[in-house]
Image 1 (cartoon, one colour):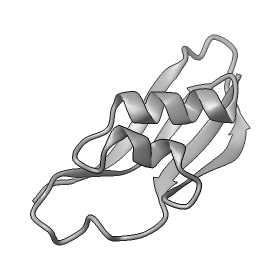
Image 2 (tube, rainbow, N blue to C red):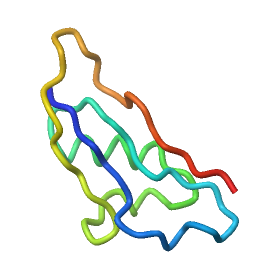
Image 3 (cartoon, rainbow, N blue to C red):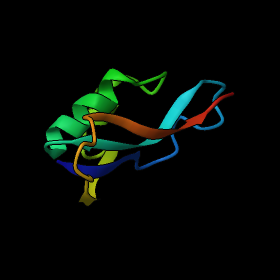
Length: 80
């Protein structure tokens, strides 16, 4: 299992009066699986945003410790 940082690449959602998720730290078996978990937990930025490389990035940041469960470890939320 690996750890991924999945985050928005641009600020088109900021300052428009909506709640958005800026990014996630996710434990997943692959980058596509990490993007899928991000999409399942999307706010007003929309699920599709997390699947689009032009809109979001998915970076491998390390290996998970033994026993780590698949899922969201933390997220950054921008409430307006």
